[in-house]
Length: 157
Image (cartoon, rainbow, N blue to C red):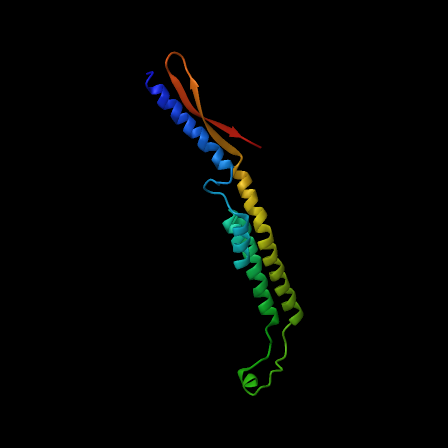
């Protein structure tokens, strides 16, 4: 048993030394980079939220964007515009509500901007939730020639 003691102490020391490296810049699996979340949000509305682990919010942002563009497209569509009129260079097609179409496109643009601006905060929120539990190895002497090895789990609020 006494020959196992140095090996167990060495194992505990190695685990203890590797634990602080995680808090000094290296991120464990599952952490999200806020800059990457913003870049995904710029690429497409709601993509940053999907990356940051907020799929419901991402679906809402994407749905509002697509819905606003659909409403804008339908509202801006002329009522009477035939192919013959366009062929004859008669571009004065009547109908359509340009004001409603412009408002809907503005809503879509505002939603897209909201999506990529809030993606950074969503990624930071995701990382905060990952930090609510932390573990560290424990090596403690037990009765006689034994050593107890275990893990300590800390829950934070």
